[in-house]
Image 1 (tube, helix red, strand yellow):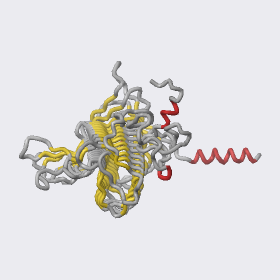
Image 2: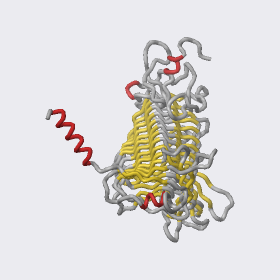
Image 3: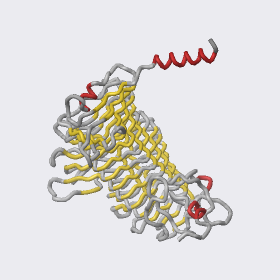
Image 4: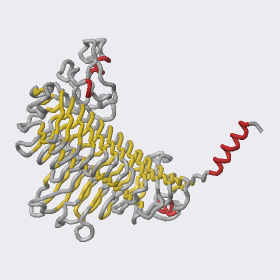
Length: 500
């Protein structure tokens, strides 16, 4: 026998020794019974190490390719070491409608170490506590969500049974990867108007523990924490209208993702109107200790919070945080930091971000960015606002800054001789997608940001993934632009003079 033949036999023997992948097919849209999703989950083997895949082949009505499974009771917990629930065999969309019941769960006692959901819509799941559509209590279970829509999922706050709620749609203690997914209209709500708790976090998503988090190319829109109470003196909501992170010594990376119209709100039962922005972090609230959080090339618009209209860093001590190539546009805070607020935070590097038309409702506090007790490095950022409040306020342990542009005030050290206050930035255009995954705010040829940034602190790419620096003023030298966009690339395309 040749050496090659021996190797082939060895490989074949190894493959035969691997456990076979199991496939369980869902062929009925019924809530229970033969061929149902419930039966498929009950059929998972908790002890096998082989991948177990739940797939779908549900007959649909002609002209309506959507197959909707409407639950009449919660599904059983997921078991099995490695599980994939995969909707991509179906010609149309698979919708699992919780109908007011919790949908998928992984309990602490499960054997699950890997769970993936793919090409699914989870809608209308609800629970008192955490994770209306997906709850993972096992820290060793790593979850992956690919092309999953979470829509109108709810977690309820109830003083009598559970005064805290985490994650209207998703709660997990384990590692989490989210790609190409959407969270729309999810919320944490009080079970009655007379509740007296503000202990809620993550209107759509809550992640805690010491495992990594990745969110890429996704959308969080219209998520909400909405509580009814009179706390602390009039009305208080929970934190993180869309996302709340309570990580310890873990890496969190959120990139190429849009956060639009998320908010933290409250209703005092003695009045007839809602109060928006009564919890910190309209889109994202970040807690925890140690580790690293990276916000890269994201878009924040129309979010409303208390401290941090878009993002609030809330005492995440010992954390390293980087904000690069993000666009913060028209977010609102009741107190400070219409775009971003950092409270007793971390070591922060903020490079090549665009802040525009964010508003702090409290007089004298910062519209765009405000930080307390934070170690800062600010380079190549745009801060544009027309409100009488300052753009930026920093009360920090140390500030290193340079090459930032401000509309009406600056936050820099005395050693910063390169940042400028230049007045209203009328050349900054409305947000739109010009490449990449999220909207950005372009600017006209010859505008102040073009080739005026600090090359030594320049992000390697812009918000669209295009390389920096490029030659934007056609003087033959490439220099970094200020803000989330590298305008030079557009000039290179239209050098022929045929642009209109």
